[in-house]
Length: 359
Ligand SMILES: [Fe+2]
Figure 1: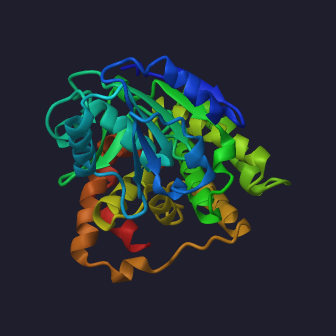
Figure 2: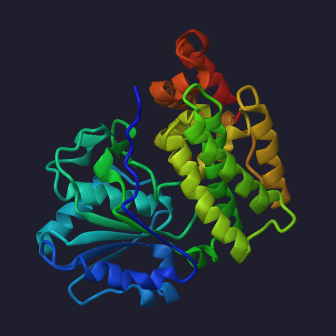
């Protein structure tokens, strides 16, 4: 009945803390075949940060374009197979990037030691063996992927995480200097993911003093960052958002997400929308469930002059809407939390289709 969640083993926080990485990795370099796999957001190719990554000649660096789609099971399997074929088992995996890169680093670290396709392990506690050492450096704050127990992957059948204790990072480096160059729309969408984590965590039957304390503080930080006297992308606010992201993640780890995340999964699975953006598309129409939260999110978007598209649903086919509703309906833990144990009496696939038609 009570969750027994795994936290990150070690955390470094602070501006400039990226330079701690070399020393941190030095302790692990003698493991397995004595090289590291770095997975880095393609955005940083050719940028200053690339030169600061403590890469040794034996290491493998992969720049990954995360824009086309969310991480897929096929992408993880291929990366694992290529690295194993080239050099065998790495000492560890380092992920440098946003939520998608965090998920790729977590997932591939598990798949190095678990045989077969990652599709076999989408779900709770299906992994057979611990993965290899993995370190995460978020360069966009908001998804909470740096702290969560899951590595969300889109497979041929489902969009679902590899979720277990071993998924959690062994180490994270939280250097908010790295988030300074995030474009305003991504800064806002990712921050809204944190905001929505907190609203959903708070509004449901699994909320409790532990999840509430984290959500309350993370919401306070979000309000300062997006609506406060010194709102905007400032160094101070970058620090705050990095902490809010982690706290939002910890809040939902001990509670649950809700209606918005269920709908968002449908949008990502069927239309390929990115997680944070999909959340915003859905959340703006959920006043029936999160009235105050929806008002406040709209105010945050308006303050920073980011407009979400309207009338999207008229271009979707009935089949697409039905498929999205099916994905969302099959996330019972989210509906159970948001609506209650009798949620099936209140929410049907048709109810969910109507929610998509508002978008
Ligand atoms: Fe999320």
